[in-house]
Image (tube, rainbow, N blue to C red; front, side, top):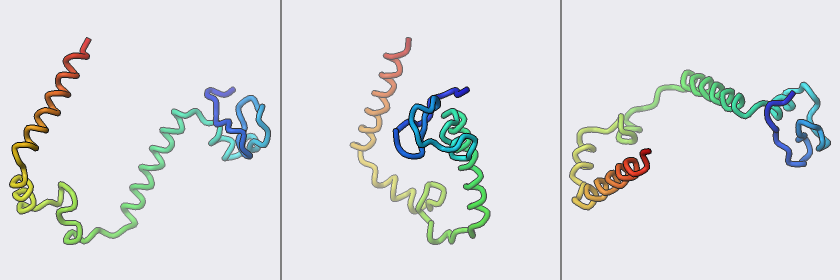
Length: 113
C-alpha cells in the first residue's frame, strides 16, 4: 500500500503507484523504493545523508589557511574590519533599517489574532 503518490511524469523509468504508466522500475529495486518513498521520509533521509556527507568531508579535508579566509565571514573579521564597517554607516542606512524593523513589527502586531 502506498502512502503518497510518487512521481508520474509519463517518462521512461517512472511509474505511478497504480502502475497505470508503463516502463516503471522493477518492484523492490533501489530506484523503485526511491520513486515510491513518502516525501516526508525522503526529506528526513536527505537531511541525514547531508549531515553524514558534511561530517565526512570535514574530516577528510585539511584545515584552511586562516590568512586566506580572514575577513571573509563574521567569525574571521578583525577589529579593523569592524571599525571600517561602523565608520561606513550613514544616517540613511540606520533610518532604513529602523523603517524596515518598524514595518515588520507593525505587520506582526496587525496580523496577531
